[in-house]
Image 1 (spheres, protein in one colour):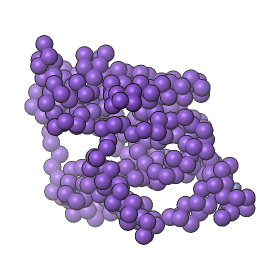
Image 2 (cartoon, protein in one colour):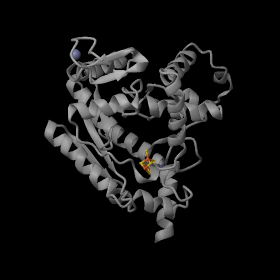
Image 3 (cartoon, rainbow, N blue to C red):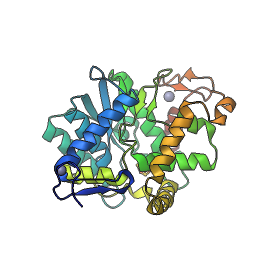
Amino acid sequence: MKCRKCQNKASVHMRQHKLALCKEHYLEWVPEQTERFIKKYQMFTREEKILVAVSGGKDSLSLWDILMQLGYQADGLYLGLGIDGGIGYSHESQRLSEKFANEHNLKLHVVDIEKEYGQSIPMLAESSHRGYGKPCAVCGLAKRHEMNRIARDLGYDVLATGHNLDDEAAVLFGNTLSWASEYLLRQGPVLPEADGLARKVKPLCRFYEREMTAYALLSGIEYIYEECPFAEGSQSIFYKETLNQLETTRPGAKLTFYLKFLEARKSGELFIEKNVKQGLLHACPKCGQPTSTPDLCSFCRMVEKANVKTE
Ligand code: Q46
Ligand code: ZN
Ligand code: ZN
């Protein structure tokens, strides 16, 4: 297989795009495409300050790398979750995030949940009795809360995450199976700023996971290969595998599924729009973030409950 641009031997073959490229042209193609998506979905401009959530994994570090190459003002945020899982997961992912930042002279904010709130994510999950053995619900809640708090406190215009097409298609698949209207309406490349919540964007949402792996490997980015130990056996991995099976027989199915959804949502064709009522939001008396739950927001309530248990 030859590179479409230079006829040299291709390194990456993308069946779904009927496109093969050599290393050099692939490393140009990914940032060009990212720039196209940033513009198409009006994610941000070069004048705005971007906070990239980095986990030490291939997607978030590649995103940071691409934004830097494209000349955007992007700083990083690493959240220390305190997850070990026998492989020193958080420790290693923090080391690699810091290494990337140092090597490229980029600014990385590091926030450690345990230092900030007295307990790590696994401890919070245990003492608040949420999560049924898995800390993912607590982790998701804490990550959303902290990313938003830090973006707001430090004056960033937008928060960028490294979600790829496989992540987005799996979430969409899960939400479609249960017709979760509220979630479906909020899913997309951009979640606009609203009521004290920072704008959230996903510049890699149209790249297949294997395209991002290829980008990270070919650019020589050192990232953590292991997934978070708690990801194993999760529903989202099961949905990803299911979609991969579909993709094997119908190349491009995943991308079509996601893009057709975005089109339908934009044109207002999704019947679900009419039925969704937005809950009324008020500011949490403790942290000031918007919430629809009475009194404290879910995060502050969880932290309070966890600390009462351990006092
Ligand atoms: S939610 Fe669960 Fe992830 Fe948090 S505990 Fe690990 S797997 S990191 S995306
Ligand atoms: Zn080439
Ligand atoms: Zn709160």
